[in-house]
Picture (cartoon, rainbow, N blue to C red):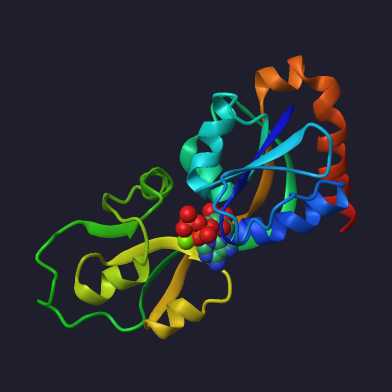
Length: 213
Ligand code: ADP
Ligand code: MG
């Protein structure tokens, strides 16, 4: 049995056509079913649908043989024990630093001395500001990062952007580009060796479909 870990949400939407081109169609509608583990039309291939940030963990421990995860998630995770097999070119966006277009009036919410940065990507943000020699205090949030600068929780945010509409709607502008993001195919290292025969056609079809899609 080959188990593929898929990220819920926008990566899933863009993964399904790729899987379909590889001949892997879930036997239930993943948008509707409450099942978390679903068989597919491909013999001996099943998918698990999990939070994006959990994909590296499932694959690292071998609970899934391969998975599809955003580069953002892989960078934040560190990717130890995983093979990053191929950039699938889907779910493209960019990771950037943003701040309010107009600086808040002096004295308002600025009692702190160091730069404060709100983000879900604590490790990436810390590394980014360290590399620039800027001392930053990272405030860990789980979502809606755009709100933080508006209510005096942070000076800047590190977050993903695709259209830029959410930033604009909240009066924020991009000030630094950290990295371009897309979803990658990752694999458990041991599985690549032990289950090579079963995994190879699946990997080849997914990568081939991504290249020609
Ligand atoms: P979660 O809320 O569990 O993090 P999402 O459905 O928001 O899950 O999916 C997040 C993943 O989707 C990110 O890790 C990223 O790789 C990808 N992605 C692509 N475009 C965007 C975007 N504009 N904003 C957020 N995530 C995006
Ligand atoms: Mg989200």
